[in-house]
Length: 292
Image 1 (tube, helix red, strand yellow):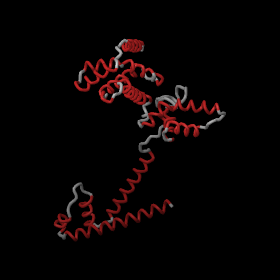
Image 2 (cartoon, helix red, strand yellow):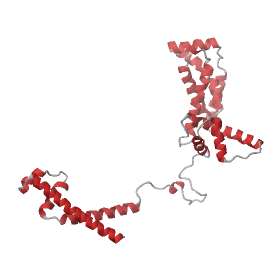
Image 3 (tube, helix red, strand yellow):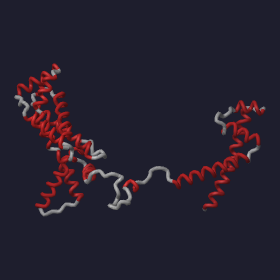
Image 4 (spheres, one colour):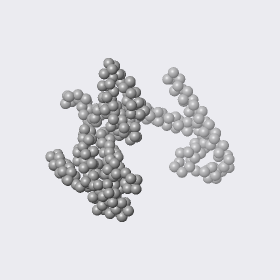
């Protein structure tokens, strides 16, 4: 930690000593990078405005991110700005770079605020960085008027003030209400307290469901065997060869073996299925009668 602080201070002092570019020099460097891909010009341009990146990074320390990481993200934003800057537009590079630096830092802060994604839309981003400030101001103004706002009124006013949907305000309020907690943390201060992860419902198959499924499968298998045994020998042979083999036999091959036509084998198969269906329906009615 001490090493990081010393490194940040060294980087800041180095940035403060960098040259200050006038508009004409800045323009020449921008053209050299854009048209000739002159890396020395790019390095000089970025070095000159590193103090701007560090200054903007320091404004986001209150979000708990390490200053070194914030400076790194600000530097990335600065490099993106240099790469996309068009000197023909007549805008100073510093003015253009501010947007890219800020966007890079904000994206980093939001990515690392919580393991749960905090937000990605422009309205959610605006809420993340402005909601607390706007809420505090609205509370002060309401107090000055002698009014007391409930939570719903406050959310509506925040949504109107920032120009975002009310649903986004409600979502962001929940995200900002507290930090992440480990699921392995105990619910109480006692050593033997139950962990929070124990309160999460298991989305797997329950033991009772497994037992019921096994019972039903066993009963159905017994019914099928009973229905199959109710057939005569030829019908049972046809059903076995047509439906219970890994590779079902064709009607034609069975007809050749039994000395029957293919159509006759099909008729016998259909008749056997009808017998089995009636047997199973009878069993089903008996079960329903017992459960009624």
